[in-house]
Length: 193
Image (cartoon, one colour):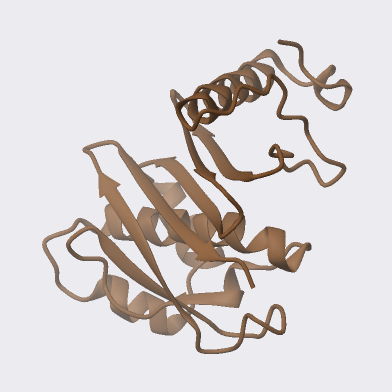
């Protein structure tokens, strides 16, 4: 498998992450009975999934994940993140989280503050990946907000602005998560409009 031209000048680490994601995506599609060999990169730099399937790829440091679905009923989103530490926590609080979310994150819970902050960031990345095929443009972290503290492998995000006629203010998305001592994984599948 080769990297697309757009990545020819990328650093080795970025090319390796791209290739790992595509290999994982191919394996995921094979488990669904799809044996296409290519998942090209689109003009918007998003993966172009074979007709009759949809998927999402994420990687961070030493992890790579893929969520692939058969059919055309849902758009999936998936994200994996290394647990934020030190300055990363503060950077996320400054750029990703609003005052209402910060109050939720800072409320006492059994989850560490670093884990809660990382989960909010990862969940918003997951939501972006699931909604992007509908919206077809970038939208900021302020387009959705945490509406309840993460608990029992779930957290809710609420849209704060309309993104598409089918994506209205106040819509809530149930994002699932798994957390380990050093990473978080979040995922979601959104019905196609």
